[in-house]
Amino acid sequence: MYWLFTTAPQTIAALVGIIFTGMFFMAENLDNRAKEDRSLFEIVQEAKNVLYKNMRIVAVLAVITILYDLLLTSIVTILSNPAFYFSDLLVTIFAVLNISTIFVTFMYVFQIVNPNYFEKIAANLSSKYIEGDVDKSEFINHFIFFERTARNLPFVKQMDGQYMSIREIIRLLNSHEIINSDDATHLFEISKIRNLIVHGEPIEKVDSQMDKLLLSITNKVQSAAQEDNNDMQN
Image 1: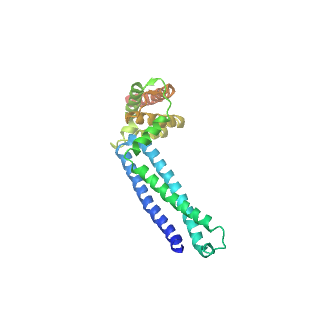
Image 2 (image 1 turned 60 degrees about the horizontal axis):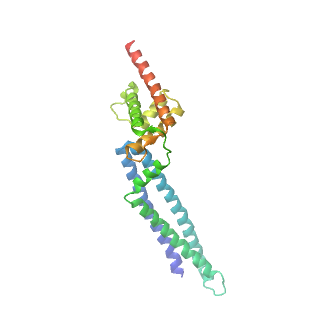
Image 3 (image 1 turned 180 degrees about the vertical axis):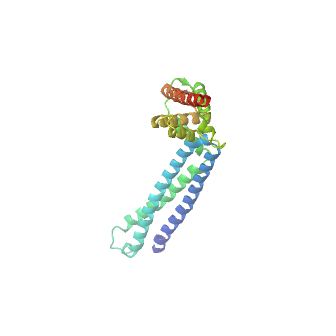
């Protein structure tokens, strides 16, 4: 029994260490995917949030299991004493903890290696949005116009030919005080919806309030662009 109690925590630690290495590798792959296609940013972030949440659960469960295993190792002589009434209960808890840790760890691994993992994350994100009454094609056209207008601003064009993501453009608009912090927050949310639609998620109608906010912010960007043109002509 002593051999079992000492081997179990080593096995759990080695297993969790290997799994964590694989999870960090998975997170790196997700980041690379977002770099290749920046419109995947929100989906990748949500996928990483789920990944890290699972890692925290596995870590806490593994620490509890290892500490309990080490505790039993230190009192193994007491457990072997026939007069000790709680030995069966403690050994049962030992078995349940170790089996549960292994089961949960592999459950999360199978979830991550599932070929449809990324698609499930995107579907979960899209399910959180309550559809409105603005057709998605109309909304996308409004977003394209906003993006085109923003990219034509001089300080965006002057970024040494660097192609900027929408999130980077939003931050620039905010830093140049063309839009305020509330506008920037709304735009981040609006861009999430746009990205989900572009990647084929079943969002057919967009909330009209979101669409109105997009048009209002676009007007601010247009006004800034017009002022820049007037300054250049003068």
